[in-house]
Length: 339
Image 1 (cartoon, rainbow, N blue to C red):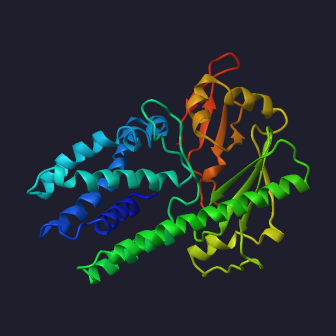
Image 2: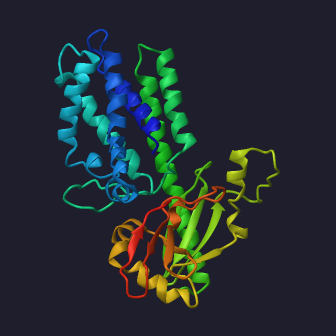
Image 3: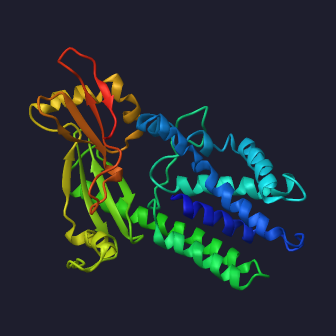
């Protein structure tokens, strides 16, 4: 989830749980604490200063751990009490700060990136995968709740209602995910793809937009579908960026399936397999759920891979593109981060 949406959700939660008997003037401080606490885990962006490989290995790690949450809440509560001049000290903010941190973790877990909620004791990445990382409907519900709360300042019920709608929206997205999985399973069955795994990824603009992957040991077959669309959505230049993104998602009945291999084909395949299985690619192997061969450089000294989770039609580039390079047939492979 983007950091601003995280922060706004923390402010909404703080308003929703504010006690009726709270001291006068404490509500703005509580909402500010929720705002900053729910954004705070993304401070791990600083690891990117050590390079893209360090970012890949550590983003959504220790700062997103439910095991370390009590410690982070204590530190944040103390700091925010100083900044916000909370007269009752850090204890008055500890509860809302803890919930804000927990909400941030939950907001990341519902996306597909993967969150190391058990760090530093495990690098397992939890990912429910119901929600695209920037979901305008999700963010819009939060903004609407905060707007209604501003108009009805004495009541917490607009924030409570918006929080309930938000939870219901995520539940609705989960149901769409199940529908997308069923669509992929039918495709695998109808085409006799034995041993296939089905993976579905939420896409932008609509909760009905999904990319459905049917994968085996050699390749990923995938289609961009809108689960409720009966007719393709036409797009003409000038319709706008949102319409362009949405137009590629087709009705399930007329879905166009594409194929991307894991290691390429022909003479490059052996080289790509060697590069992929080299020690240099260990971090990227751990990270990439849907790895696919992209290309090999001239002379076959570098092999590039992408993670199809982040392949979004309409984008000029695909993020998290990494390569393995070597200087000669007997030289060791080295990881090449994105340029």
